[in-house]
Length: 499
Ligand code: BES
Ligand code: MG
Ligand code: ZN
View 1 (cartoon, rainbow, N blue to C red):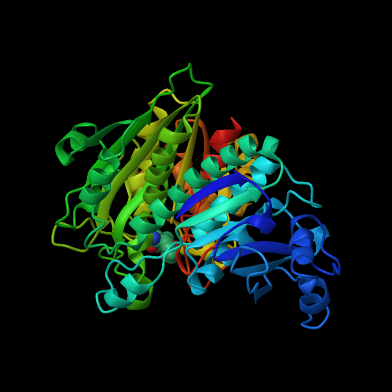
View 2: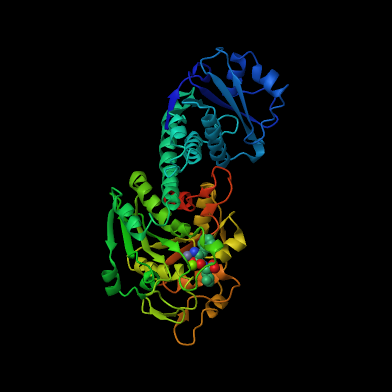
């Protein structure tokens, strides 16, 4: 699907479907929708609104044929909801729902009004960006493993073009910029979703490394097991020992052409399958554990987007990738591990493996001369219990960084919710024979995990995002269909763009 913008009038737009809109409660549409209404002899105001009771509720849709009155074949009217509740995030959601609808109408060429830029008075750049983000996120599907539906798939008409039609030519430049940025961000989200959707037998640590290496415009090195051993990453290496898949330590680096305003490290949890190890998970909990590399997938997606967004920020993407399996060489409860920073960890539970991989990845990140470290991880079931799939948990040692990330998430249509970290959480981790153990009691498990990670950040500014609940959803929410969400990609990219 190509997304473009063009100067012109909606009433002259030749396409399969023309998308216009209506705020809730409006009886006589104005702007572009009003012009279309007039060209159709008031069909929208006197029939659709009056007789068909189209109320303009958020995401409400109505399709009508034009029977040749204007060049567009069909009109899709979408409800924008109450004007006082309207926001840029709503445009993204609406755009995603519209794309699904026009797809079901088998449209190839779609023209659209610039939602939000009329009476709502939002900036053209942002409105266009939200339309692009929503359309690309909404158009996502993952059907590469469906052979039976292949014929059907070939028959399935894909949308060829989505064109924003705007009367005022002076707005086109900012609209085009918005489309471009929205496209890069949404494609990064879908990039992550694709990697997470891949089964664990495909998305192995080796595959993650290959994917990272394939990104143009960054440096990328992949450290093999013996190098990682020499560097002293005893915590990370323990986790992968029970698997026949070799672990990979991935370090991507983007260097801006101008001098860097800031140096940032993004550390993603890359456990490509979490069986729980010897403390094996019950079947129901294990079923979806291919998603345990969602942080890594987000990190690679972000690095890919960065090469196109080209911010003046130095960015490191770091992933300690391995598989947590109960093979004969597997690490055991009671083992004592020595992390790269010299601290010793008693293994209390082999299923608290993410923090062990992150411990070494975070310390490695802290040695890269960066100003800030952000880690993103499907870390704890406890975070999922606390916040559900509605919000990711965020914690860290720097309130400003946390606040900035929460704001960036809001702007991206994501939600981060801060969880506390107290001294008591550290006390939970006391071990009799080592510096700490890898988990505490069941209660407050998301915070205890965060507090564990803090031991490896070398007092650098750091924020930890727990996406265990948000990485995968079981039903459609706003612009996202069920499945992997690319959680964190939009938030972190927005944060980077804000620097
Ligand atoms: N990968 C899981 C966390 C998880 C749970 C991610 C659900 C996505 C959905 C993590 O490695 C884990 O197993 N955590 C344990 C920690 C416990 C043993 C302290 C948990 O949350 O149960
Ligand atoms: Mg686990
Ligand atoms: Zn895990």
